[in-house]
Image (cartoon, rainbow, N blue to C red; front, side, top):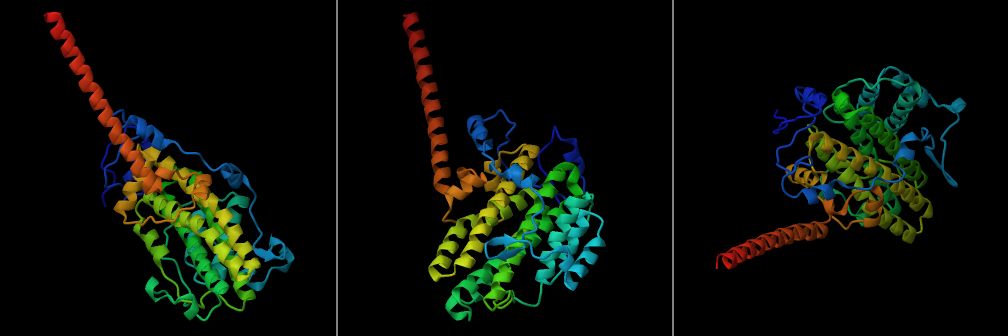
Length: 394
């Protein structure tokens, strides 16, 4: 499998990783280099600038969040240590069999029962944080284990709310639960699949995505609990497999994985979250709307993590993030669509010219106009010089 098609001058550890039979950094398309002094240096400089989410460092340094139940006043711990169920004890036994973060992630990916997957994800991250486990290296399964239900169908085959047999609030909550379950696997696959490249990426990369997996497992637990309160369960409605397909497409390229998952898929959650909350409020289900609102708020961190590491990887590769993001979406056929929640995306740190066509068009037009003006100035200057020469010769 081909790797990078341009030469590295810096980052010898990156060069060593590229000799691996499983490439982690790969680009087929050409883009502008952020370390190049060639054309468009001013626009390249602008494309490298972004404002990181103000809460990113606090999120990274925060304690392990054990609020896996949704109480009368919001999130709260599920159980006291003395009240562990037999299932929890079994999960602990399973988790204790792994000796590294990558092995724990592979265990989560190989677990089919959704609630067990959610609990194991939390145990995995907790052990990593509290026991100082090594990162390690593991091989992810080709695809995560899945329960018999829900049946995975094409998006066209998913019934409309009125034909689903579920009330609107349960229908919307089931769809969100499916997204959160996939998000657990997407985050752990990123940890496990790219674990051989820890020297290049740095331990912080894996710590962040294990943290994301823990958040997503908590979100799934909240959705599952609320579905049960409404008299339903995850699996009562067919679902699609589009989220995992995006993950599969980017299994050989960490930059593409970051572009497709946190910067596109999870950013869509920022766009859809407020609309979903409004519909639930209109339906009269304030408890579910509160859960969805909290999940949408916490997704900002996941998008911010994606932006931060995408910029970091682009800098290692000598690439301009803005152009690279657009190139990767084209190369991997990743669809980018609105409407966009600009305020939430701004908070998460995604520059608008990365995804907003109108902003990009305006930016490109400005570049073209700048080139025209420079050419005109050059012509005027040449004509002035010629005129001066002619005058002096006379």
